[in-house]
Amino acid sequence: CKAALAETNGDMEAAIDWLRKKGLSKAAKKAGRVAAEGLVAVESSGHVATILEVNSETDFVARNDQFQAFVREAAKIGLMGNGTIESLEAAKFPGSQTTVKDRLQELIATIGENMTLRRIAKLEVSKGVIATYVHNAVGEGLGKIGVLVALESEGDVEALSTLGRQIAMHVAATNPVALDASGVDKATIERESAILRDKNAGKPDHVMQKIIESGLKSYFKEVTLLEQPFVHDSSKTVTQVLKEAESKAGKPVAVKGFVRYALGEGIEK
Image (cartoon, rainbow, N blue to C red; front, side):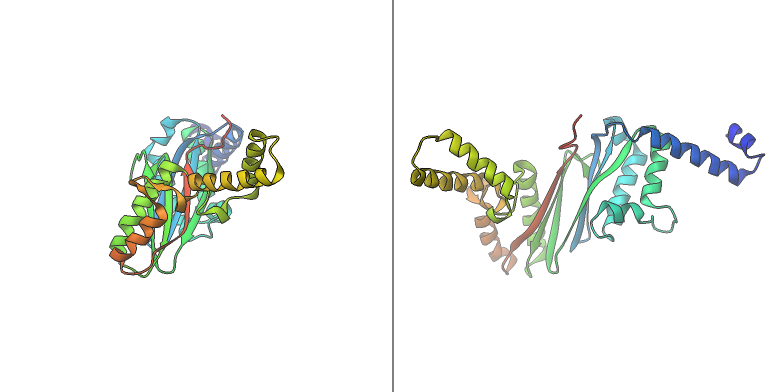
């Protein structure tokens, strides 16, 4: 502070700006350091929900009150955006001219670690609920794994909320790659098909085709949400559970989408 005042001839406002610029330059120097720890946050207003991952370099920072408050508030601000990191970075904190991006830079300068707004997703339903679940929670809506599940229905909201949370817990445990077979990307299907071909090399073409079809069918049952055995009752698939839930909800129930974030997945440490 003394140096800042000396640099600015005792001008308090200019000294504050000088300190902020110094902090931002320090933050820029930290930008290349790997940040794979941090928190996943979920936030729902009923028909709209966001899930956000903010990374730090160490788990120690993830337990910092300032960091947790920032992540929680950023997830809330994300409800108003379009579900992209760019819109979140540009958004301002309520009652302030400070953007989310600027506030993160201030945190980096204050705490001394690289931090990144890694990814965000947003789900919406016109009728029904979006359930949330956090695994390994360190605070309300904050943890290591976060899940959103969008249920579309005109049925009873309380019954839908209970069902949605159960399915969200299922998603956290099983990590499905898609809602159903149509959502599995072509590259994944090609990779699985290639593995089946290699394992059954030498078989006639007509036999090979049947093997691949059968193998992919089994694969889809393992990795797509609607076909997976329900973790709370493995004698039923998620589709069967949804069908049974319609009697409690009083109306048809459909899963319109889900998102699962696990902290640091895909980051090379």
